[in-house]
Structures are given as structure tokens and as C-alpha cells.
Amino acid sequence: ITEARFAVSCAPAVRTSVVYASGFDLQLVDWDGANSRPVATLAYPTDPAWSPDREWIAFSGTYTERIALIRPDGSDLHWLPATTRNAEPSFSPDGTRLVFVEGNCGQLATMNVNGSGRTQVLADARCQASPDWSPDGTRIVFEMANQIFRINADGTNLTQLGDYGAEPSWSPDGTKILFTRDGRIRTMNSNGSGGVDLATGEQPAWSPDGSSVVFAVSTIATGSHLHLMNADGSAVQIL
Image (tube, rainbow, N blue to C red; front, top):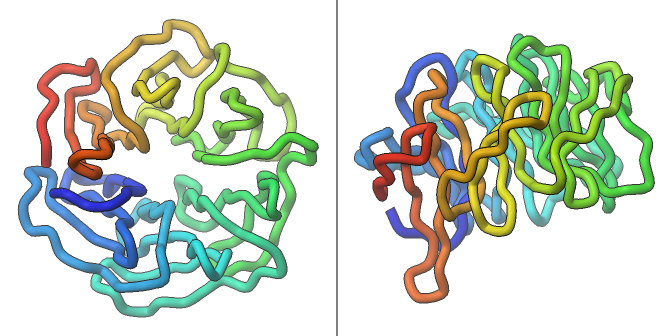
């Protein structure tokens, strides 16, 4: 698969498909790289995220600066209400709430999946990005000022993890965090220790069973390609 740019998310529960945003399109592709098919053509969608039951895909619109939900078959598209920029959604493990960033700088917030019940998680002058809910629903990992932090879902116990990095996400068992640093994909323990370098790439996402990682590799000469590798960095292949 060759596309202009990616935002990647893997289907939970079963290892079936990857959703990615590229150009004007949301696309699905099977884990072996086959059966690439469109979900919808939109105005530069980005940051797609599967709901735990795989019934919905949340994403944000580059131009609308709002979050939307859509069925994997492209039906039931609806945009959630917003008075400021909303982006980078991630579902809670029970599928009832979204964590996202709001405002031009980006501040952590949560809301119900219908857009109600908005709650600010962290008020900080530093811009925040790439939030991801822990598998047990108690904590959120995110990027702030080029560093990775962990915070309780209620906004307490802000903790810096490691030195610096971006694009963090929890492993399905909650023991590891996948992230990027200087164009490399890495993992570390959920307490920030035990950093391991895996491969060159960006926008990594875990497989539902934690055994594999899907990610994008971009070059000026060839554009962007989806790749798949084992969680230890071995057996890299192009989808």
C-alpha cells in the first residue's frame, strides 16, 4: 500500500483490519495488506480510532477541527458538537467516552461519545497531544512539550515517563507503551523504564493481542507505506 500520509489505528478484539487516513480518504486494509477498501471520502480526515466493539471509527477533520464518528461501512457519519478545535480522539475501554485534545494549543479533555459531558483533564500552558486511554480505563498517556506523560483519568497524579518522545499508546495488557523518538519507534515499560528501540517509522499502533505493531514509513522518494512487524522489532514487512 502506498499513500501520501497516514494516521493508523488497529481494530481491537480480533486481528482483522487496520484503519488509516490518507489524503481525503478513510481506508481499511486487512492485516496481510489485502482487501484495501474505502470507508469514506472526506476533507482530510486524520487520527482514526476504533471503538472497542469495532462498531465505530472516531476521527478528526483537518478542516472542520471537529471529531466525527462513522460506521466501518461508511454509514451513520455524524460530527460531534464543538466550540473550539477538537482532535485526536481515543475511546475509553468501555466505549462510552472519548479522550481528545481541544483548543489551538491542545488541552486534554474527555466527553461522552455523543459529545455531552465534557470534562477538562489537565489545565497546563504546555500543548498536549496524542492521548491514549489505558486498557483498564484508569489512566491516560499523552505527549506534552515533546515528552511523554501519564495521568489518572480524573486529572490527578501527572507523571513524566522517560526523557522525551511522541505518539504514545498503551499495549493491550497495559504493561508497555509504544512511542516514537527522533523518527524511531520504541517501547518502554508503563512506568517509563526499559526503553527498547525497534525500527524507523511513525504513527505506530499495537495489534489487539500485542504481538505486532503496524506503522508508517515515509520517504521523499517513495511516499508513505504501511509496515507490520513483531512487537520486538523483528520480521518487518510492507503491507
